[in-house]
Image (cartoon, rainbow, N blue to C red; front, side):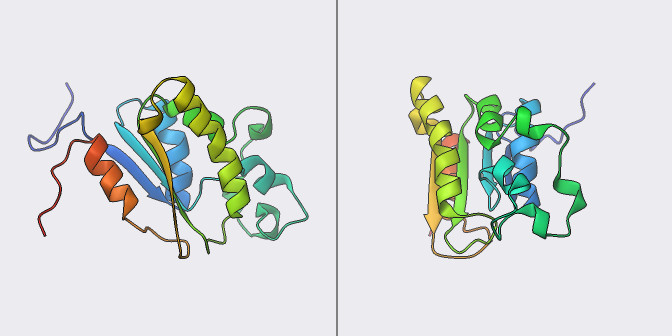
Length: 158
């Protein structure tokens, strides 16, 4: 028997993660289909390149983070492939132009694969990317609208 709070609608639970939470947003909902919508903030990018390159400041090789390297990931899944496992559920990327996690160009190139997949599936409205002028943070503008639309939440009153 599953335990649940009576005020929780199990069909309207989303996953919205920033930074390592964004990293987790790419992995956990790919395996757990109960999440109705997924938003990756401040992490979505060309993850394989980020982990293996030694000629760019954004490389994980230059950071003291032992926990991010995943065995054989380069031969299996990049972020676009993880997003493909999330499809057809709504998926969004939130990206600050000044986020030091990756270059905008890496993010855009990887997201283009996701956008193409959703278009080919006939559900392009279920994915989007929002850019904002800012750093590695939750921006909460387009993402909140995305959550309201795809979780069927009423808009907040002013």
